[in-house]
Structures are given as C-alpha cells and as structure tokens.
Length: 320
Figure 1 (cartoon, one colour):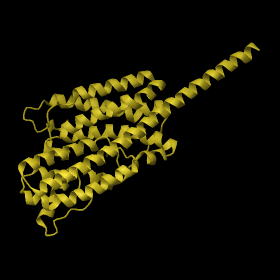
Figure 2 (figure 1 turned 90 degrees about the vertical axis):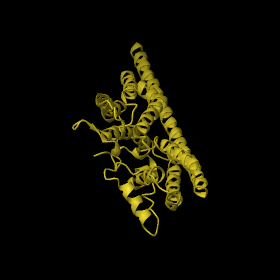
Figure 3 (figure 1 turned 180 degrees about the horizontal axis):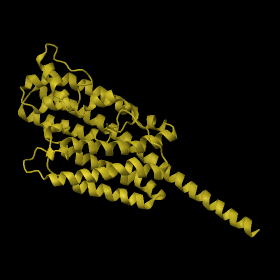
C-alpha cells in the first residue's frame, strides 16, 4: 500500500508538472499571437496615415510638407521592424518582403529602379520595387516636388496593398487557425530569423576583415537611419522576449532564460550610437557589437530550440 501511495504521488507530481508546462506554453503562444496581430494592425494604420500625408504633400509640395512625409516614412519603417524577416504567415514569401523593403541591396537596385522610372515616360515602378527603400530615394534625394510626386502616389498604392496583404495574413483569427506545432515552430523561428537579420545588418555596415565601415550598405542610408533602426529592432525584440518567451523558457530552463535576457542587455549596450557615416567612428565598438550579436544569434539558433524541444524550419528568409 505504501508503495502504491508513493507511485501515486510521483504520477500526480508528473501530471501537475506537465499541466503547468502546457499552460505556460499556451500562455506564450497566446501572447505571441496577440502581439504579432497588433504589430500588423499598427503597420497598416501607419501606412494609411503615411499615404494621407503624402497626398497632402503632393497637393502642395513645400519643404515643410516634405519633412512631415519623411517623418511618416520613418514611422512606417519603424512599424515594419517587428515583422521584418520573421517569415510569419504571408511574410514567408520573399517577394512580399521585397515589396515592403528591398534589402540587402549591395548594388543599390532600389535606387537604379527609381532612376530608370523617373527617366521613363511611364513614370511607374513595379509593386516589388514600390517599397520603403525606393520611397527613401524619392523622399531623401535632391529632387523637385513634381519629380517626387510623379512616382510616389502610385508607389504608395502598391505599398499599401502589400501591407494590407500582411495585415490580413497575420490577423488574430488567421494566426489562431495555425496548427499548434506550426505555431511553436514559426513563433520561435521568428526570433531566430530576426536575430540573424540584425547580425547581417551590422555586418553589412561593418567589415571586420577590412576594418572599415560601409554606410551605403545600411538599409536606410539615404535617411541616415540604418543604425537607429537596428537599435530599435533589437529593443523591440528584447521587449517581446521579456513579455512572452522568457517566462515560458524560464519554466523549462531558468539559467538559459536569464542568460538570453543578459545577452539582450549586452547587445543593446554594445550597439554604436552613431551611424556608420560618422567621421569619428570607433571601429572597436563596432567589433564588440558584432560579437554581442553573434552570441545572441547563437542562443536562438542552438540552445533555445534544444531546451524547448522545438524544431525550426528554414526558408527564403534565412541568410546566406
């Protein structure tokens, strides 16, 4: 009888432990669904506001209106950052990602496409090349108001259509329809993809091999905001981790959860405050930032999936 009581206690303990882990996992998934859907809604709202501001500017192309439109562009890019390179829902389609922001772009394809469109009679860009980086050329290069407005209205129409596609595919009902196993894989994979993307962004601007900076390889170099956007993207991913993934990971491996939280802090402290275009850049700081992002990326690639026993998929959003 005593033996049966011990066995019963062990089984009950296992059941309660498994039940608690399952509840913690569902809390994580629920939080991810809500924050992803909210980010998609925010992106659409910002895109609609951006389009209205552009229409106001093109109705009366003056410097003050241009400055407001540039600010609306920046706010749109910031709203895109939580979803960039996540491969969530429709964003698994690489062409849709390009229709939002064509990067990396080593040969400045975005700039060349805009130049060609301005020189043509049609004055039009394809949907794929009506992205935020093409818009940056039209907003931040030295152009006349009529030149900007010859392309921007149609460009914003295409861009808004792409954003609407993202918002529909990442709505809460759409995310709730995903299979449980796919949610586990896709949500965790989105962390890995963003960590890898941030490392790629920094390495595009900084060459450790040649010990030099490459400002024109930054994703927002025309607006001189490439590093600012990278810092914000890291901050957004850190906040998302603290709110949703960290509590679940802590229930499985407390030390790893703390180590990952600490690495986010370290990376945030190491990222340079200056843009790569700065003349007095400290290359040692860039090297330290690269090492911090390498460590963050490694945690999401190896330790975290292993600890949570979640298999990650690979797709076109992965780096080289």
